[in-house]
Image (cartoon, rainbow, N blue to C red; front, top):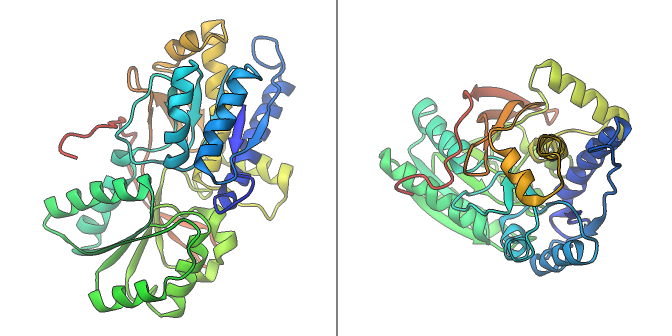
Length: 357
């Protein structure tokens, strides 16, 4: 089963995520399937509406009897699906970088949690770029608020200061008053957790106000995919923190990029959640075949310690906490919409409940 926002404000990223997922399953089926069986992918539209995700998850598990669900982009949608998969003993693969502070027996988290994305970004901005004052702007739901809480703690521990914090509803496009507040506060950096279609308006209006070139903007939820909608000229010179960029120079990534473009068109670009969505079916296939079973409990047990060479590099499931070891990478958006990688860590052990946060 797959639940993606094919409509609504989150569709700007989730449609591309589904493309990567479909490509992986097509490859798996072409190579003989899983335990000799072909995979039938049932796709449902979450419509950027969190209760809809829960309803679709229940339908997939109760009616369609799916072996696993590949779903959710926002933490709000994941929080809605979590009680359903726990009640019905389903298996959810979640592809998005997120705030951490969660561990479900029925979810495998394959994106970065805060110690693999947020904390490296704060360290890089403060230690390597000398930024001391920050203005937080985010979409109004759990991921931005929790991410900013973690970032604030990290900034204040290092002697920095948050000079403003504002949240806007998902899909909001009016950032004029907020940009005036940023101008008045004169921060060293804007730490943005704006999500989805709102980024088009936010970054365009920041560029039009001349602030993008005067204040460092760290986009925690903008990948190369969103740049297509925002416009490369509006994003160039801003920064992002992800585990994967299309510009990673490895044979595995070159093969992935070539195959994706051959499948969907040379004008397509690839980003973090898309790349993670691509490896999830392979992680599931490897666990099923290691277990010799589609049974959820056996697949979960077989996932512990499971290692895979992915486009982003080698990833490995933690033995106990259902998260992947991940690289943190920080880069600058270039005028062509691609990312120049400026900083990269070794694999970071997942720590979804970091002490003191």
